[in-house]
Image (tube, rainbow, N blue to C red):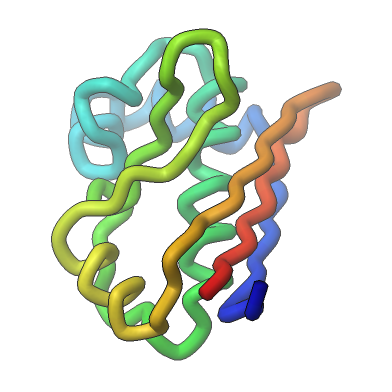
Length: 119
């Protein structure tokens, strides 16, 4: 295993709740893909943290990657993972990364995510 990047992010659930209350559907459509949308601020905060952690793991490859190009998915009862689209996928390919490891959690008003990129 050769590490190509790491990233971590923490988000206040209330911050995401306020964005959802203030901007509603517009916020969801701008930052999340249809399979990610929910009215649960905790889940949205965890997804937001995952997107931010991924961008930090990319480092200098970030450019203008829209949040919607980074999708947090769950297959069945298994752990969440990232599915990349558009500019996020292009940026990842430039790093030589072949595996993305994602961990998310939320508790007591905060959500946290960690991303490890591996060659």
